[in-house]
Length: 187
Image (cartoon, rainbow, N blue to C red; front, side, top):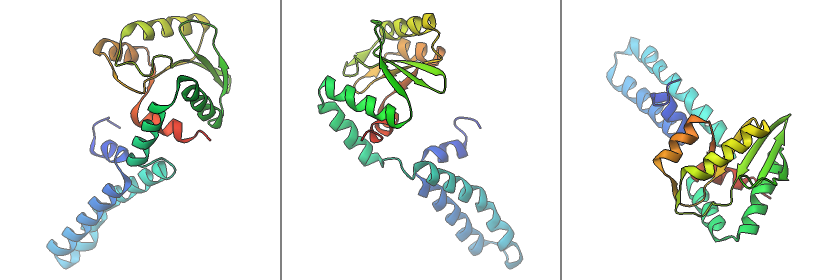
């Protein structure tokens, strides 16, 4: 599915939006179509109902946007040690084994199902995140044979070059909603 197709956008949106579109289609069909075409016209709402159900299933246990903002605000107030412990607890809840990494380019090595992920989170409160830490993380992970890499970004944003590097090397950038979702799993 194309990233900016209507259905992809609706899958990323709140679930009720798809159901509202479906209801609008049904109401318009009932009001504007002749009697013999109302049922068939209303069937055009089925894809929106399915997308709404899929979005609801995905979002059922996720924090709402307000809860996500609150989780991120709480995380911002945490000390580095407490934030680190919260991240580790969240990854363990996801089924990862978390080990500290002795390499200067990464903080942890996550393992699950025989695959490893190298994670860097020590610059999570920086205002601007540049290319250097991402490049060092990727090189270290490649040398170690890690399957994936992840970069935690609580505040600030990636520079354009850093974002391009992350996309080029498939570095998972945990920020905003994805970081809030992860933090919601910490107990």
